[in-house]
Length: 225
Image (cartoon, rainbow, N blue to C red; front, side):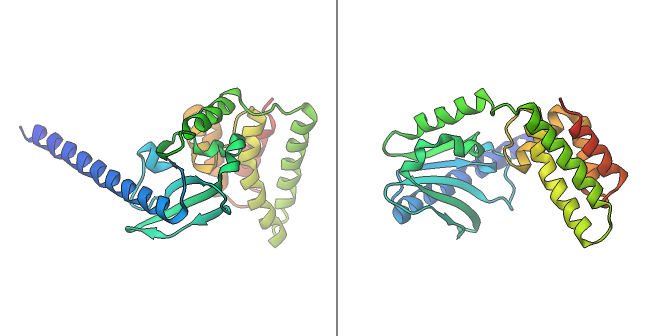
């Protein structure tokens, strides 16, 4: 009986949370339409996926006619916004918006959003352009060179270490022939699909410049065929 009550309480909590977010998004939609005269509003990120936390930004892109691209980072009803407003002409370049996969259309007054999202999905499914062997080898040589320079122990070496670790994640996905969709999505993909690589990267990212753990992740990435 107690377990049943606990489950009912959880269901009520989830429903109340959903109602609160729905109300927030409706108010936010109205705010954006009024402020920017946008005809498309697309929610993406954690609020679209449903895995948001109290600290999460609300990620949105909007499209409006005859506007200058800009970023709205206001705090709206206690939530931090990360809203990008683009000119309608930008819809002609869906390849620039792969980061909004797993989205939710909040507003589409001209019935253009579904076609735009469809083009993004198609580009994603087709995959990125394959690297030729020369480009792959360039990436491998660059990572090895950066690792060796990071072992110097001076400020330049430390800088190169952080530069190497940042770019190594993107290079990993390029060598794999997969899209790099930002740090959060990429690490999640690694954790679910390449646990060995994920664990090596996790250990290296918190280790000292030039460490054995860094050497292992660089070796792992450069051996990708």
